[in-house]
Length: 259
Image (tube, rainbow, N blue to C red; front, top):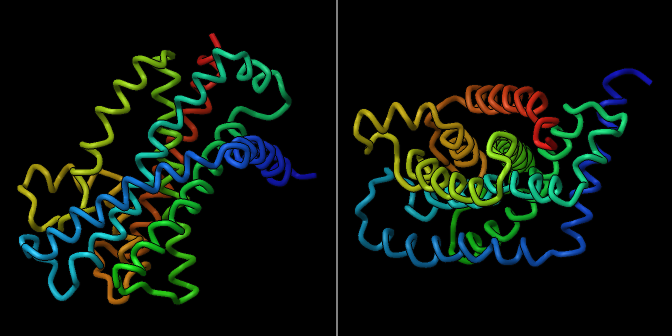
């Protein structure tokens, strides 16, 4: 067995552990569907009527739907590190660390499981978008691109969350930092308004925000005629490199969480 296949098997073992939790208690996914529904049913329809945000030839709900999907993935993934702190307190983390699996495989497995959760959440957003008349792109290649955007975004933010958990090591501190980070990340992106509308300083922050590239990739693949702020290759490259960087950092910090 070569190194790559061994790494993949050990990472998938962690995915199975995480998805087992979801199968036993699917209520989290259902409750997470409430927030995107409120954004699209209330905020989206009100803003569509006021026409205060100019989105060119694209209807506002069409423009907004990919941003709300990315927001849903963000809000779930950014608190992923909290489960790692629970695992430390329950003694589960110590069992992971004495296993033969490399730390990077454990971190990659958690990142992939976050991606699976994100894909499951996307079904709710797609179903709601369909009911609201959003012009969804059902091309198989476009759907595959959307799935890839969701997985990469979820992997990045869940691993970033794990890094925070490794640093603070406390549920109370983690909750405070997580709540502080979510809204700035969301509003400093192109999720609910175009980058062109932003002041100069916010444009810079938006272009440094991985969520912007996830939304841009989703908008290009999820919506018929969705505008491209960046080339698809750039979106994929930024998300892939960002995810790789945080996985490497988290792999080094993860053992320290158990101390």
